[in-house]
Figure: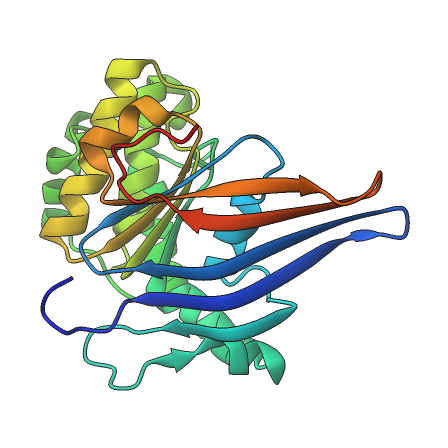
Length: 255
């Protein structure tokens, strides 16, 4: 980041505990940052905590404890103290941030089958209470290569087209932070690279920050600016701890 701007997302000394009486999982995040205009990857095996971390960033889950957890949007001054919002249970403020600042792409794309592509894309705008002009929608659709699909239903799209529509729906209402849970899981290598290239370009063109969960290490070198992985510890038969750590170089595959 070289302009002195605060990170969009900053996490320090975060702990999230999950589990029941007979089993437990603890995720520790000593330090994590996400800057405007970059793509950050969360990489790891199944069960390592990467989806839990994504849910923390998405404000779906609150931390069990937090040294620092903040969201800083451009022009907002001091930013939002997310740890404080969770501590005092301010669901109204958290819901407003989810609605206004975040875009989310689930692993399956999450498109509603009974709506056209155009209607799917407009849905988050209606929820947020903003309008999306046809010209703007069509410009974004052309940028992502799905302009010819706008009046189709999701079942008439290829897998790659559905993922691109899911990206478009997630950014149509103007979020600042785009979160994607395994968006390339169902794609072959060429389509996966194309989808990540789209996210990379959007991050820079629209000044977004992007956090993407992936297990595909081969895609890192081309399209990711920063990467985090997870070290799993088995504390007992029923207790597991995962610690998130930064990779020194997104192009380096962890051992």
